[in-house]
Image 1 (cartoon, rainbow, N blue to C red):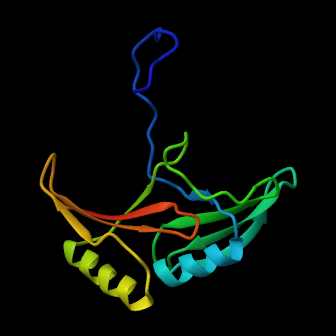
Image 2: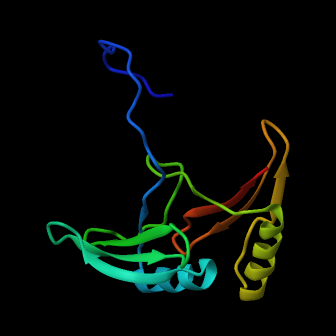
Length: 148
């Protein structure tokens, strides 16, 4: 749980937010990851951009027809270690799907291309939802989620 370091002088509402703009994931092998995200999630390369200060670059992918953008980042100082959600930082990424039936279609897709996954888990508490988990080549957990 987050703690404030000082008491706020006055109570105010935080300014408005719209949605997640994009997600940047540091990967160990850009080419391998781009091929995986393209085949598995149907993303397409939009552009490549250099990092400020010349420390690497990002390949920015988009799922056509959606506002889902994922940047695959290469940092010159990356040692190639695999992702571990038990360290400080990212735990997992959850991507919404439109219906419970779409999760079954994802299982069929993943099975057809030979990608390991958790199978669909249906949950009733604390609210109804279903999820399907898959891991990318760097072990980053991606959760496809439907909420009723």
